[in-house]
Amino acid sequence: MAEKSLVGALRAEASAAPVSGIEAVADYGRDRKGLIPLWSGESDLATPDFISSATVAGLRAGETFYTWQGGIPELRQSLARYHQRHFGYSFDASEFIATGGGMHAIQMAIAATVGAGDEALYLTPAWPNFAAAAAVGGATPVGVPLDFGDNGWTCDLERLAAAVTDRTRMIFVNSPSNPTGWTADLETLRGILDLARRRGLWIVADEIYALFHFGGGRAASFMDIMEPDDRILFVNTFSKNWAMTGWRIGWLKAHPSLGRTFENLVQYSTSGVAQFMQRGAIAALDEGDEFLRQQIAQAQTARDIVCKVLGETGRVRFAVPPGAFYLFFSVDGMEDATQAAFDIVDHANVGVAPGTAFGDSGQGFLRLCFHRRPDLVEEAAHRLAAWIARL
Image (cartoon, rainbow, N blue to C red; front, side):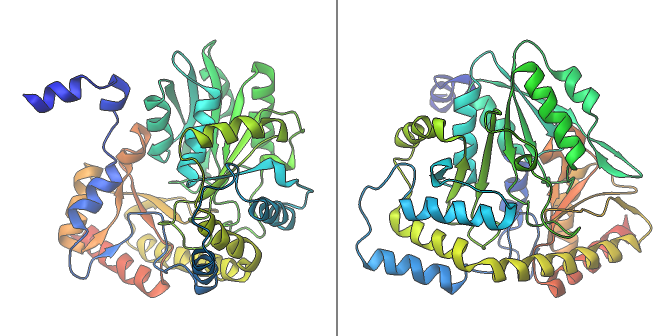
């Protein structure tokens, strides 16, 4: 009774925060001997030494004090150089704010653009953290389903426009997408930007997987089409590109006029990213392009392997993902995706995430992360094929 009373005394938005469907399966199978864990979006590599060594050097140099709220100048300058290399435009260091991971960047973007009584649109199936964070912040997340057909996953711009109401303040766009791999082309991005301009909406652009694009070069970006005064915030993380998921360091890109606001939001949330960690982040940005190229090439090899093995079963439906590093697939004869994920742990010794973790439009699907050694992904795919054969 005491536990219920305490929970009931919390803000409703906090107590209603959902359990992650991904973590539920991971907690169930985490300690299974020989299990191949493909449920989370991370590689199987530890952080490379050139990053860790720079971090240790900063720690040994005594960089353990309070620091710049927006990030040390060297990191912000490094972020500007990194973006100029990969996006081909000129950037200023003042456009970048260091954050405690991509999730912290998203939380700040939410806090800056929506609140109680406001609506935030997002495309589904979707990584669940955005919608949950928006709801905890008091806003109403509104999912707009992507279409799935012979041409893969596509965004219906008319459907997105129809979802806008007088309460809508923001559109969250994740491209390339987790979990589907959907990757917006420039025409789709222009359509979303035109809608945002007409209705006075903010866009929060999650382009974390922009370089994990298998069509040659990076994925299309809002940076390719925006004007300086467009209402767009970019959220990003060091987690995916450089095997740094456990570090919890990322960045937010915004117009320089917004820098003071976001520095204040950092002050009142985390009070800044540890300076010695920022040294490692600089090394990742300045020295990590070759490591990243190798990871992208390996991910493409693993993608092709898992698509071939599962495709040969004749019972799996999916779109070959052009970006990110996930396969979102359905299986003939699978009635309950959530139960299937637990069954796969028990009977195939493979960890996947249920599609239901990514919203109602994920019902009937499973997601696996193929950002692992290709031989492990191949073994996991054969185990899954054997499980499918028994359905």
